[in-house]
Length: 437
Ligand code: ADP
Ligand code: MG
Image (cartoon, rainbow, N blue to C red; front, side, top):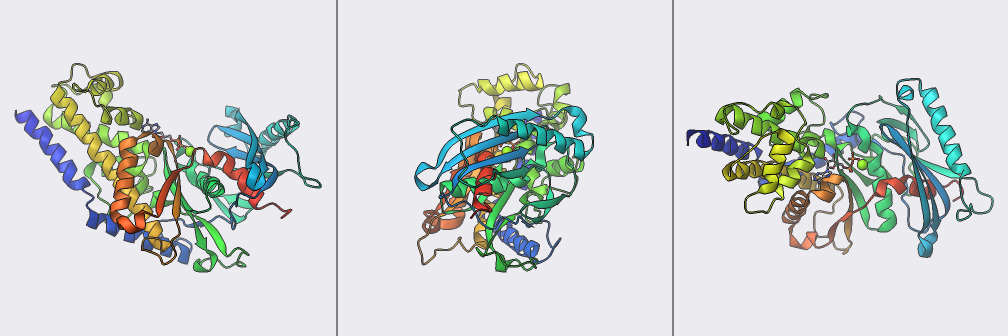
């Protein structure tokens, strides 16, 4: 009984420190909007990069012709071609090839890497079939998604800020803009894109004259896509626990990506593991000995957590099975399993509520958080495995956003899953920025 009391105390402590009631969410949303302003005002003015993407027009759906995309990720790259048929034809046909990058090229010079990529791309182009055809007088145009942080100097040039390896946190950098482009192609009312996968990020369409740090010519469209790099958001209003602090301190990038460490798929399972470890240390939750696997960082993945959280069986048998298979813990009682689910519930819902607050912040910045005189829809293109597969997370996010916005506004706000938007997004951007337009 004493043990349960102690385990319960850890749970209650977690619950208290993780609390994200409406008032706090409003503060988080306000802080997000304030940081957006600061990041647009000056370079380095905010934790948010608010990177100018040089994408000044998004696809309209009218695009026609043959376009290519190259998507360079962590260990492989994808090449894609798409035949666009305009308003009626839409995506007539698309083909994709995935090529893994030989290990020695990952550590070699960038010259060798880019030679390899160019050769692979040339081969892919050579395999172009009869179904694809360039419009008269055109050359092939290519969109390039680069999953490393790049400081762009124009839409077609940029400098690599740093090579990032290991975890795919930075993978979302330009994915987000691809998702925005793909989302807009499908639905003209898309104003922002959010990624909730291994990492998290957001991008949105800003008015170019609302970007004080922009000193170039104003684009014809008057618009500019901003890559927020919102994973690096932080605020004193974020409900951080001792578990978050320890996770951050022991991470590869301490002090960075604090928001991402609260809401994204890479970390949710790891937070749960840390709570369970503490319950074991303080309350012998899983018997007198600490199960060795429970001490291994990142062993409990968010998909495992999600499966346990969604277990509806009377004896929580999936929870029992995961504890056994993933953590090597046998013969857990129903009471223990319930406690594990309670931990998942707190961690997932906090993340989802904070993600909703972030979106609310973006809508505030866009002036879409209050009832407008014109009854336009506001669509957010969403991508990422966390949002797609973790139902309790996505439902909590949507409900929270609805609560925050109120009935009237939320009736015109839609979150739309943009499945694999980023794949074709780069090709669509090439089309929208075609030199032949
Ligand atoms: P990435 O973000 O790496 O580009 P995805 O968008 O496909 O890739 O997202 C993958 C991430 O989504 C995983 O790392 C995991 O955190 C999360 N995820 C995948 N499946 C599930 C699931 N069933 N439940 C919860 N989270 C999941
Ligand atoms: Mg992705």
